Figure 1 (cartoon, rainbow, N blue to C red):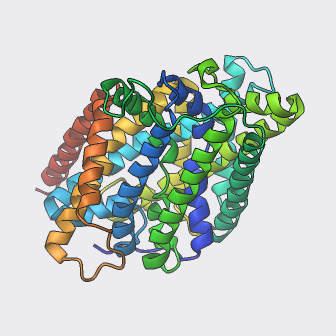
Figure 2 (cartoon, rainbow, N blue to C red; figure 1 turned 180 degrees about the horizontal axis):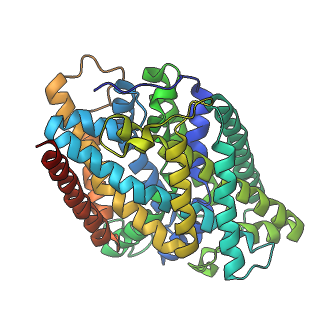
Length: 441
């Protein structure tokens, strides 16, 4: 399979920044109270550790595939190569199919989260919030409608905002600790109780969502300098860096705010925490910074996913119009416009909680689990001697990844919805195939 590549202009710092700003976004700030609320014993920190572990084992799979096949579209190409001529076309089509729905949902979740969090400092009714979320999508479209090297520089600037904001929150909380964060069970409690793992399952549906994005660089594989080295490095730096920041932020905030007082729907937890320490003005400043983080995440998400329909179109497995590059700026502008357009519509129609759960449900089988199996198929076909990066302790990460994703899928209320989308995708694929065959005959 030959796919034309755009210019390789993104370096390691820019690639890591793109991953990290995708990972953070509004997610950890709005899901933190929900995660705390799932645990009636204060052991919520383990949901964040579980999320980090999930990202690490899955990151090994992405690193091996991304280093070996640094092409635009990421998973699209991994499936196309791993599953062979017959299965590969179906699996890669299913990925593009679910991406065409799921990616705009991701865009919508960031935009909705932004508009809801803005209400901490600006009183907005429902329709005004929808106008803000729609306007944010349009602003991100305008920021991305330019050459990739300029986009890389913008990503680095956003990345610094993300890190500095979280570091400020961490330092503020650690210097005002009032409560001890529980790490271990007490009395009759145990890590081996059903209640604990039920809380882990429900909390991790949100924490894993907050870690997603460590692989964004793989969607831009054709634009990464020295991809065989920089793709794995950017993935692992992103995972370890964000995991440390998330864990420290939880310890900092919940060491000041007693976990017993946190409500699951308290969407302003971090801003209220800063107001408790420094007053309303400081809370307003941190709220503005969190909003900048939300916008930066949306920026990275749209950047990465706009390359997926492009890769499929160039490969003849999607509508041809998506394969067009901008005549002067050299980026897939049709794909970018369509993704933002659908994201704009979803941001006006859906609720944030439903968006988050449906995103993960749709991706688990078609992307994450299928990709783990694809690594095994590729190793059996081609061996491991020519791999620029080989995952550690193979096949243990693959097995663990499949078990974790199956566990999260079982506990996801939108699992049936995600499966239905995949089944419809299979039907559409064979309908298109039959249509093309009849035309040729």
